[in-house]
Length: 417
Length: 132
Image (cartoon, rainbow over all chains, first blue to last red; front, side):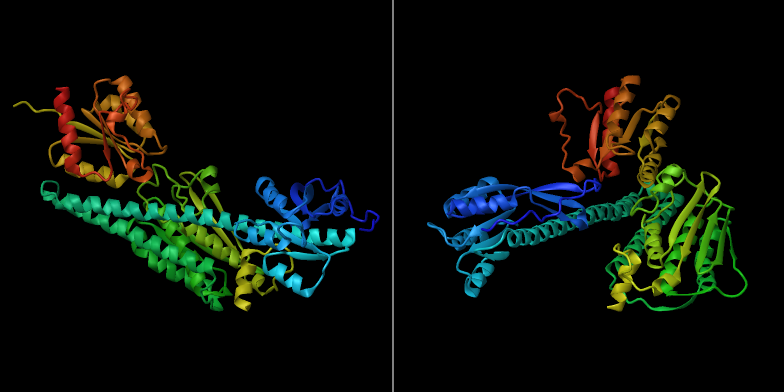
């Protein structure tokens, strides 16, 4: 193998944030000279994977036969193998076949003197990642290794993300199961009370038991509906219908829906609007979900005789929806975790208020679709104000301008596809 | 026959469970007080001096029931404590009393949720009889 001046750029020392990773390469060739040349070319060689700011360096190990290679594959667990095609005992292809029965993500680069399309096809079919025909230059070797490393890192990263996704999903489902079980247990308990002739001899007890059952069933239905909203938002499968939506009209219809609950507790609701209708291009059902969640929270977490203020204003090009209440409020620590799924502020004051714990997390997801934000300002025992800023114009900007793909861009991509 | 005092205190963070037990116990002449946290229970304990305390194991913390039971026993060694828990079901943990020869769990009975009122009353009656 001809020598070549060291052309590989060494990583700049200024980029200290990059992390280091070491991969193990097994070099398999029956010619000692070949092994030495390959090892020499790769000594001190590094590959920088920019997407994950990682610099990869290598540990080199060698094997002189297919048999030795198999042993080292088992004991050393290399990440990458440079494998000679023609070996004295079992061949390179035999080693590939041995590997294909095992679950491993090792990448193999075949090295062979008989460069034929046929050999390459056979090796590739048996799982080789790349093919180097002898003689090759150190530059060709490095290019092949660089390609393999990029592939390997991307593969491992994808697997890690998938595992993380699975973990989050599992956690979501187990919390969900718990949240669905709780109302069932409560309803079951009341049914036993209703079956107990002594306990339910009293009409007031009977009524209370039935009322609590109805309330818990209502909470369960709300949870299921919220769950459906969330699933539709996250799957991106739902057909969004963007049309002109009059925010005042949506707010008025939400207020109407909440009126029975509010008047039962003497809570007044008031809508303030600028002159003229505030109309934005949006999916009406999404805006309804936002409005319903905010207004129903403002009623639920209010005090009897309190008030709810809904203010819609233009902040050109954005619009602001503000919903404030005169209720129990919350501490800074409590409001910090408010938007996470299934987080419900648990304390003496919220004990008898039912909620799915999904409402605000849905509101936030929808706000993201509109390039918007959700903020909360709250003081215990004084009240809370939720501010949803929507930027409907943002959905018109073409996606992919920055490397980071945000939630609303993803949704747009799906719609355009 | 003199009026027998039968005061039960129930400690659970589930308001519906509290309500259900109250409905069943009060209709049978028990006087019921309730608390929804360790703190609340401790605050009320001296004043109400119940004949039996029924505790949920998991409240704000996973082992609140054990902690509370331990403290009650320290302060009122003779006060019977019943722990109710859905833990056996959820974690597969088993609280067979024979497994606890050292009695580190300071409770007189452990009942697995979901419990039926009859079960609870049987334990309450037994413990009050033993204490008398």
